[in-house]
Length: 421
Image 1 (tube, rainbow, N blue to C red):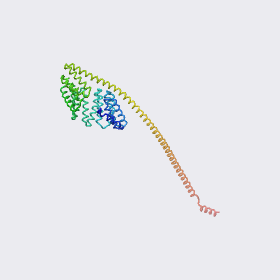
Image 2: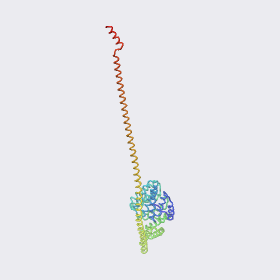
Image 3: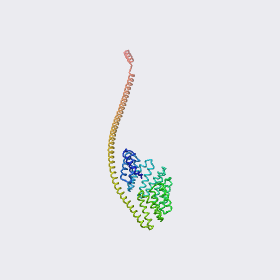
Image 4: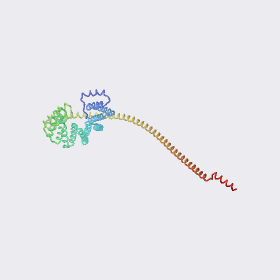
């Protein structure tokens, strides 16, 4: 999930947002503001994330689309609306896959796994954890890899696959690279596995190391959690005096951060330890405080659910507005497409007519050319016939002339006749 801004930073972010242009930087600012509001005022957080998403989509800013969906998913997850949270995270995933950002890609996959984990769909959760693990390893990021290995180990613990759980928690520990907070988390998780197997000595050794590292890292909630776990272990080991000692330390640390869940666990350990020691007055007092914190959490849960209903109403309203706007844009686009189609059909029809006319002219030209060729051929045939006839006449005349007596022959013949008479 997105990290939340420090309280003092919110005013600065809001100030920067006022003069921001509608660009990618504004998308990032809106998401930072959303993260700052995420737990304290989720409706405001959701509104800023929706603004970020709308602007990112308008700009086709892929990273902004991923971050905005992730913000909305985180808010829905915090409000217990897991189906909505999953919808947003899955919306972010295809855009994250297009980016060359393995950290962001693994984050989305990890957050999808977290939603499935919250719904107790453990197999599905680890399916996405392993996808994230492949990407983190390919990117060569030890920090990312360790966090994912840790998540896989926790799911195996819940499935009571303790051998697999220890394997992945120790792999995560190797990847911590001297990070005290990360090492404390791994040691605490390893202790949890041993505790589930009732191997209390091993569990105690690892949680003690986790406690030391959490203190050195200065992480109060993690320190309180390790104190609480130590107290619970000593109750299981029937060492109630030490259980009370560490439960009180957990209580003191939890009060500094007002972490209700840790406060509740601390009072529960104290009540059980005092009861087993026979100190019923203190046990009853601790139990009453446990009930008070539990009821406070219950009231907070009711408020959270009411907020969730309000958020759902506001979300549906905004979604309807977005859909109406999108329908309007789609209608305009459809009209433009229809206009383009009319133009295309008109131009196509004109071209078709021109082509038909060209074909008609070409056909006429070919027919005329063919007729001219036939006329020329007929003319040539007639001329040849005429020549043949003239040649025949001339030939006949020559023959006729050759057979007729010459004029001198006729004169001689006449003279002879006259002499005889």
